[in-house]
Amino acid sequence: MTPQRTLSPSAAKLQARVSQPLLFAAWSVWKLPAALFVGVRLHELQPNRCVTSVPYGWRSQNPFRSTYFAAQAMAAELSTGALGLLAIEDAGVPISLLITGMEGSFGKKATSRATFVCEEGDVVFSAIAAAKETGQAQTFVNHTVGTAADGQEVSRFAFTWSVKTKRR
Image 1 (cartoon, rainbow, N blue to C red):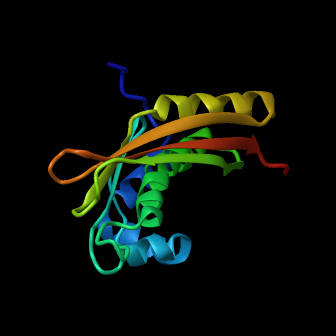
Image 2 (cartoon, helix red, strand yellow):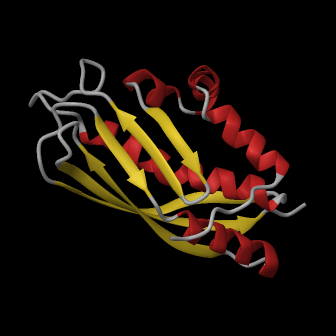
């Protein structure tokens, strides 16, 4: 098991803020209104792991009575992107974070809350550290797996991210 990373004070403050449901909802109003509408939630944000979810319900379902793939993709993206936001805050320099690719596969029909777990924070922190050190763009891929309330896999995603220090 990887030892727990010590975050900078500003990154620890961000981690504490987004871990509080009301503060996360307030942040989502400005940054992720569609995700807020469908009910995407952030349950855990650690340097090496992020857990998000999306409910099955009228705001997130498709005509086939399962969770719409785009609602699943929102929760999946957040499970990888929140790690990027945390790593950028920890780096202490302006860095841009951009999705350059996405792959998804769907197994079981999602008819209950789908929970997405990404445990590749070390990949994110390494890429952002390299971008900070070299000034060159870095790309990395993060994987996340969505499971239903019964533990069965409903979907899995791979997001390709690009990070680069911003010009000052």
